[in-house]
Image (cartoon, rainbow, N blue to C red; front, top):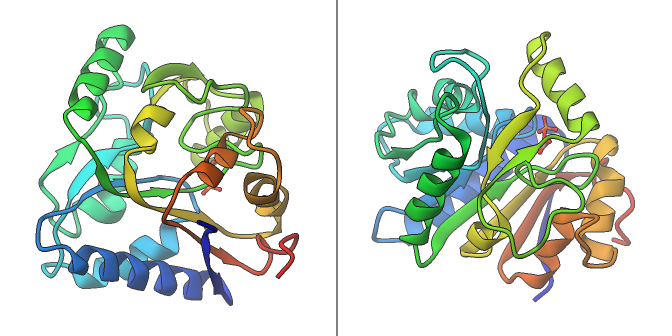
Amino acid sequence: MPPRILIAQDETDHGRITCDAFLDFIHQSSMRCSVVLPTGNTPLPFYAELRAHQGKIDFSFLQLDEYMGCAPHSETLFSKWIAREVLDPLHITDRFTFNSAADPSEEVARIRAHMSSFPTIDLVVLGIGQNGHIGLLEPGTDFNCAASLVEMAESTWDANCAYWGQDIPRSAVTLGFQELRKARQTFMLALGVSKAEALYRAFYGDVTPECPASYLQTMNNVTIIADRGALSLFPI
Ligand code: PGA
């Protein structure tokens, strides 16, 4: 099934369209949905829109990825970022977050065990790296991998240092393809011409571990929500 494509005029429009699609999905379900949400700059307009729905929406949050080796209260943690942007303002209390300060192999085992209790995940929202990564599944990752301890690619690490204006750890934990493939619905968010090549390779290139996002070609119910810059190489 080819992906649905929603085209945004600008960042604000991207936030609005993503928020509408998210709310439509959440409200279709009579049960509380399980939702994986990403960090990064791309979803920030979406989260800004979502905050206006405080008190009217609830879901179970599942973390996508996290730096390993940060102090538990470090402001640079992805879990803190997503809490500030969405979970605290919306009063979402059901959260499965990763422990950056834990022993990495024990943490990976805990994440795998928890995620294996989900036969499906209702909605997975992803961004894309310029190198085609999703979550922190970097180029070369086996499509069969479960949640894992990973080393960030150099370009990913640089981009992550830029978020904080300081060095951050190079290792991280991320959900794997085994978890992401449980999604009943996947939203791929992309903004800006800097993502155009990665987005094109993801949906028009070979399905290859060299472009982790190309895995989404094997999945049903994928919605791309992107602006014209990110879609500039698409034949549309
Ligand atoms: P960005 O990051 O939203 O800050 O561009 C996305 C990603 O690297 O997955």
